[in-house]
Image (tube, rainbow, N blue to C red; front, top):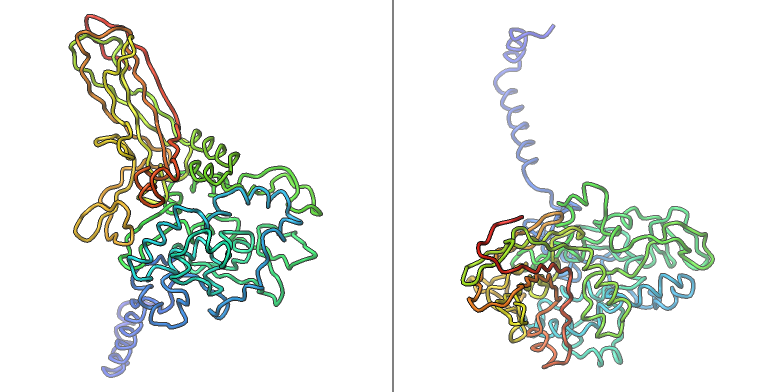
Length: 485
């Protein structure tokens, strides 16, 4: 029978020395539990203390500062990877979809390569592996990446150092992940001693390669490895597309990254395979219509425009029923993120921008007011935009030098299923001609024209401004303005 008196008697019989021994053991156990494990946990991001401990292990980060790993962390043999055209012989429809995507062009995309050249030169090559590990994983893990390659032109590397972007062999040779950012994947092209492909089918069979079911390929955290980006030296969160999804209603309702960017279609994954109701599409449709159009992928560019059109809605939250000449008027405009499972916009912070172009035009066609126009290759000052702003150690906003980022100055992007309300105030001229039309356009571009001109040269690539949504209302002139909703 257990009671306080019995426990006290038992303790006294241990003796003072034995009691002290037990106390020391208990203290040691508690201290041991308080020390983080030497090996980073699978979900650890690119943050302390995980980073420093991995750096202490010479083989822990073979492609530092990128987080890619390979079996035994050795260089892979380029001969272990097939060209995507080989995959296309059997996976014909999927291959045709992929080759039009930004994934296929991830290494040779001109804006990225121009940024990479600047970053490599500015950091004396410290970020060479970091940037390339998610734009040409096979190029990185086979040892073909160096400063000379990263600073060369697209034309030169295509001829002399050809490397794939994010291709079939990249994604379907990933056997595991070691974290949730900065390319924390494990690339294993011959996991079983012969060509091995990891995928989402438990019944997949191929006469050409081993097919291994991978639960990882069915989940959004597969995408996290390259769609969460943490600055490798300052640890500032540069991009957080996966985290934005993870904390959204989409995540809690089992809508994955693949749900939107790889929607299923009825057909065959391989020409000799069975008919399936839900073959994952491989267009990887995003929002970069401008670059896809430049690369000649017209249909893919149109899919990007359609994707943008589904992402957001714009409406008048409050607007007068009439306008009075000589009177000051305020109009509130609501922008809602109704279709993007991440912030609006997401991705590369110094480029992606969504904004409202608000205009007031009278009956004669005269523009009475506008805010949101493009001037000198950028949205004009005070534009109501949605964007993340990075800063350096001195708090100076960075226009292009992302490699110097140490902090996020501001982030007013719209959360998934969230909204923002902006107010526009203008004065109605006394000589106005009715009716007066108010128009609010929601626009997007992946990069400001000014940035692209700096990187590629004046007018080398004309950045498309994609209209995501629009609302318009014509108002009569009146004696007294009445608020209406």
